[in-house]
Image (cartoon, rainbow, N blue to C red; front, side):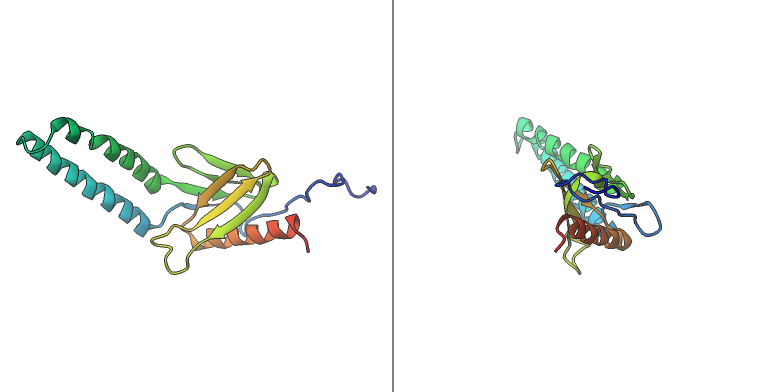
Length: 165
């Protein structure tokens, strides 16, 4: 190790990444994806109401029908986070609001890969798969094309640092 190199031998090179224009925040899911989530929630709610009506008429078991609302509530809870979820990218971390806050520090980023199917982003939400040095997998969703472009830049910058060939 020479005087100008402060990185210990064998340790990973430090990732230097800053999003163009600074920190950015975007919706995690597209409007169409959100619409699909609300439509499915609404249709399942209407079905559950119809089943309750049948139970009141004696054509279905009230006990069984009452259990329909528990999965519906779980769907509603998930749909809430689909509607309100945001992803934030800074020069130091990636964070997404969800049922719990998902966060990874860029210094602890061992792997990153953007997964998207061009033309089907409205149906299959684009995402960034990440792993930290401890092996923990975190997935971050983004609906904004600019955020996805930054995710791709981050993926390429990380690959250049972690696996220089």
